[in-house]
Length: 117
Image (tube, rainbow, N blue to C red; front, side, top):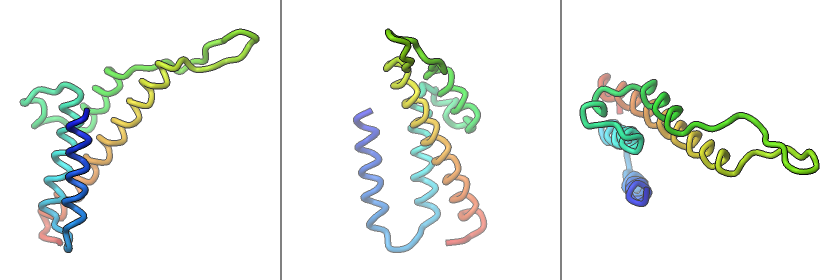
């Protein structure tokens, strides 16, 4: 994931230099971000072009499964297993990223299609 982090930092620096909102560059930025999440999930080139948010969320749920139950430890204390917590956080982070990029991409596409800037 190191290249992905570098990409986002570079993208944020490029966005910070813009003086005026450009829906075309915003669309490209969010499209690349959404495609990056799909690439992390193992989508092929053909699947990348036709993937929807439902496909992305289902892939995240199937790849990063975690239990919703507490484990009883000594003396009756109940805790979550650390590995489940890690997988749960990965699930949440990727889900939020996918939803955010997908939503922002559609807003930017609307702006491009209707000539707004």
